[in-house]
Every structure is written in structure tokens, then in C-alpha cells.
Image (cartoon, rainbow, N blue to C red):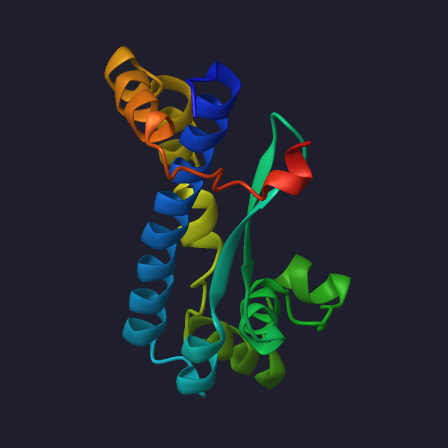
Length: 160
């Protein structure tokens, strides 16, 4: 197969998304293990990722896992549904419920395993995609694409 610049860009994007998915998978598994999230065995076994081609110039890295893992984190960030009366704020009076709510919020287990890792690593991915397509990378991709047995790794039917 002869060298095609568009195919090289697709292959580069596919490789970078796959590398990032592998990196992120390791990060998520490590975080789940460190935080000792309830029922972690099922959550760890359910985490998967794949690179999906959307068009000639776009692809997406998609993660899937059991829904309770994300629900745990979303619930952690919700504020308790308890509202304090205005006179409690004015006079600084704390009821037993107020003290219990403060104690409970201080002692809540942190379960931000997803957001911290996924959104925290986006800049790494952005920089690798934006600045990684160098002459050396093009030469390496050219060599891969020029091999006789090469077939597009990027779901060929979706690109055409």
C-alpha cells in the first residue's frame, strides 16, 4: 500500500487514543484499588475502552463500566438535602442535626475515582495529539502504512 497522508493522520490519532485509553485504564484501576470502593471486583472487571471512528477526521475514546461506579461519585458531590433556617445562620445556633451533618460530611469516603483521572489527564492527551505529529512520527507511520500486509486499523468501512 502506498503512503497516504490522511491515512497516516488516522493511524496517528488511533494510536494516540489507544495509548491514552490504556494509560487511563491503568489509572482508573489503580485508583479504585487504592480507594477500596465497595464491590470493586465487579467494577474493575467491567471497565473497558475502545476507539471509535466518527468520520474521516474524528475519533472518540469511549469507556464503559458498571453504572454504580459513576453513581457513587456523582452522589459524593451532591450536597445534603438539609436546609437550615435563617435564624440559625443569623445567631450561629447549631442543632444536633446540624452537628451530625457536619460530622457526616467531614467523614465521607472520597470516591472521586473517575472525574479526577479522566478530566485530569485530558491536557496530556491534547498535547500528545497536537504536538506529537512530528517528522519522526510521520516517517514511522509511513513505514507502517507501506508494509505489504497493512490494513487500516480504523474501521475502514466507517472512513469510506
